[in-house]
Length: 171
Image (cartoon, rainbow, N blue to C red; front, side, top):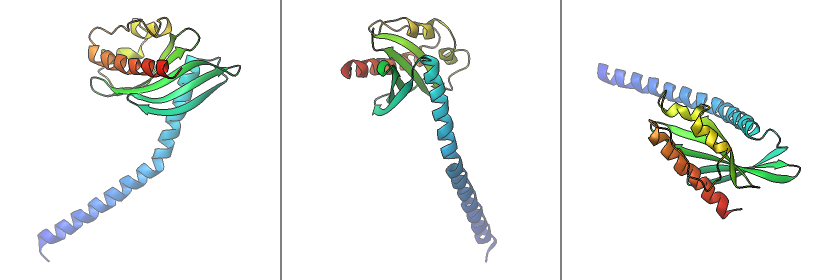
């Protein structure tokens, strides 16, 4: 056999072994990653509403809305929490946005995952005027943006508006 054929076969075997190793690693770690994400989301839900006795989850998959969580206190749904996912300036951003069902007011905002530009887009994870507005504003009020991070916050605001529209259509 020529040297080129031997090298091609050798490279093919190396690719096959590497592919099998990647497949095995993904198969083993995927359930662990999924469970860790579920635990982290539950923790954030509890941070939004520590008084809730339980959170009922419903898969939505409509536009940017991934899931809807009903936060219950004494058997009554007091908050609708929406998991929304959108693309910001340079990464996928997934957040939880809560709406108080008694007064149609935002009740909380938590970031599940993001990898935006440090110092700009990452401001959505900080305690600032942008994140605080989701504790006081009515859902009908205009949502502000962060100066210097307009792509990130505009994308988030659009996704949040989708959640508000979905909430209003499904009260």
